[in-house]
Length: 364
Ligand SMILES: *Cc1c(COP(=O)(O)O)cnc(C)c1O
Figure 1: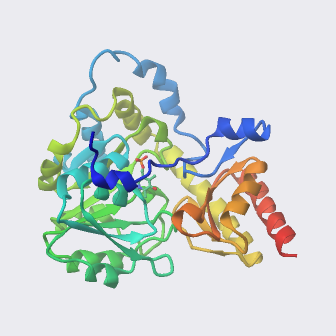
Figure 2: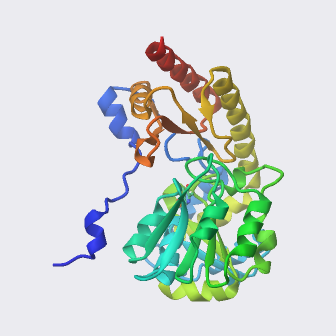
Figure 3: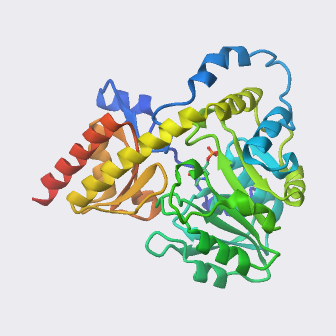
């Protein structure tokens, strides 16, 4: 047997620690997972109430065109139905984009660190990956544009960026869009769109029709709280969507995920409450970090990357023993950092206390 050469050097995705695993290992009853940027308030109660009714007709294949969700989403976003593609999470849209546009001899440009799936899928397709280090948590636009040549097929922008939480301003994104040659597809990954509230943010969908080579990715996994159902989407011109569609599996999103997404969209009050709580707890966290001289990136998302005076792994282990799962920056090449999802107010209070105590015990 012979697999693609590139796969020999690649590792499967390493997920954050699972709750049951930690409970057993540390003999704890309650675990708070702040590792994968899920919504601490779960998802809309309207989805929960109607879930039992959604299990009818599971013997039938889902609607491969997601017609009902497409109609709902198009009117919610004020775009045409032909401008949408749905995926088994936006992860799958990343994969579809790579399958469609990348191959040996082509290259793709992205920031580093950023969401790892762009690189991962690009490598599997045989493309050259050109990574441009962030500057102070920001995409280095000039340097990214410099990396583009006639073989560049896709440019990735992640805003707010995972793992820094830093967003791109309207003028930054517009500079990119007006500078890239038309043979380059620009992907704007807005997995945390709902949380962004900076006045200078880029409103991608308002501007979508001005750019032929732009696709915007969003998801139901983060603010909508439906990560377990796996549903995300891309918005672009009808011609980009037509180009991508043959690379999409015919029944890639499930019947339940499509129906739940429709119900979730109808409950905007759940989203608004989640956003308001996130904002309040995030501001309290910023205040705590400043009071304790701990550096952080000003996040526009529901997570914060914190720079520590000790190793990220050491803090990770300490917080784990207290029942909090966070992400150590080690795997991201940021060994003195942790990435922390904003949780419920009461849990944030406890984790802040634990962070402070750990730092004091090590540094004094
Ligand atoms: C979580 C995340 C995704 C993936 O979300 P799914 O829709 O669950 O696949 C995509 N991009 C970024 C930046 C993310 O953080």
